[in-house]
Amino acid sequence: MRVQEHPILGNSEKKEAVTIYFDGKPYTAYTGDTVASALLASGVRTLRKHEETASPRGIYCNIGHCFECRVQLNGSETVRACLTTVADGMYVTSLTLPKGASI
Picture 1 (cartoon, rainbow, N blue to C red):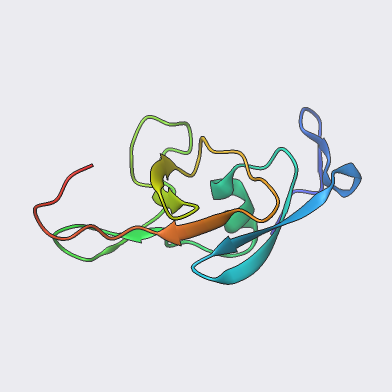
Picture 2 (cartoon, helix red, strand yellow):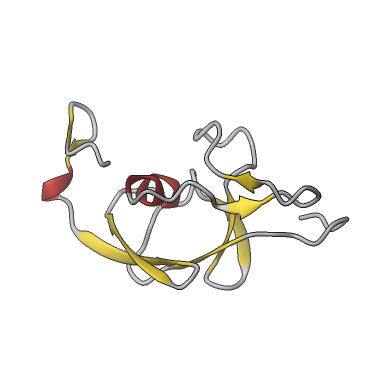
């Protein structure tokens, strides 16, 4: 599901492979990937659950305008997956806030 060759982004086969963990499961990503693009390329579509309805949420705009792709990074800060570059060994957790909570 990954674009292997792109006129602007280059050839992904020439990039270094790294491992990230999403909800405890390892995924292969490449240097320069965002968390969102790496997970999307691995078939992951749901990144969190809606705070009130518990409906699945994932990548919507993929350019940082919305906040649908919020995830927890390394057990502490909440980030937008589409704006966060992967790092080897990074732990990403799906985010589901309790009803009435806010970031």
